[in-house]
Length: 386
Ligand code: 0PR
Image (cartoon, rainbow, N blue to C red; front, side):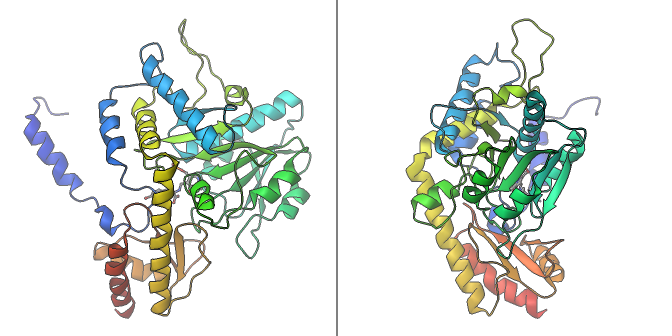
């Protein structure tokens, strides 16, 4: 650390210089996170000093966290019931869900010395971290031809060691939505926790269904669903780090509970101790300001832009690796890695898969407009010809 500090203007300039290197949103086609809503940014700045780890000080901020949890439970088919917490994102939400699943099995007396979790081969890599940390063994079910977790196979793989099944509502690689409405009934009644990872799809599917898109129901209205991960910092337009873990059971969020050292401070139900109230405030601001209508309108636009992108790709002779269910387009592309690197050298960021080689993955979200797509497509063709 320097001995004497530098003036504020200097600090600002240095930070601005480094941040100018960040890629502007209008060149970003790989990110499920987007430019947050301006009201969310404004309110997050106003709450930059808040800490949900100390609810004796930040009582009002804590009240807002509770309101957000209720709003999300309401969005996900469980109005007036359930429990949950705001967390740092999908990874922490999935971690808490698996902890609660394990503790539920322990409380039931069904926890064995080798607890297993049934997952699909496309489950998010955050579960690799979670399973390693919690000593859980994944039982990996290959996805079907539609890249979905097959319910019949889930039923077959549940055994005496199973503590949980994980379904995904919007996979990170393809945006595929598992048939949670078929998986729920096969898990129900088997003393196994059903978790739905809707980190990516949680803020798309409810509105897309309202707009008439043919997507399976994935929330608490499906019997058997015990918990859901949903991330306001992805399609919910809140600031990073805003995730949420929600439970059907009113007591479930409390199954992961660690007492603090001090009198009159409640137990912690989250992994983080000191945690940003700004994320809760930002989420609340965006949910209240946009409402269902606002989110439906954003979702409509995202699907229109996705259709425009797909039409443009097809017109240029490209083939998709899968029919997009949400707003993630995966296009077959020879020399995908070289093309992606070339695009990056020209300022454009796309993803290429380590597992489904020779594909480009393009994500449509709030900052991706028709104009941006129209700029991108000719650049992509130029990259292919190089
Ligand atoms: N579950 C699913 C289905 C996800 O898609 C993700 C993240 C997670 C869990 C983990 O969430 P956190 O990263 O919030 O802990 N999906 C994105 C991905 O892996 C994350 C991302 C977002 C990556 C923006 C890059 C980026 O620019 O693709």
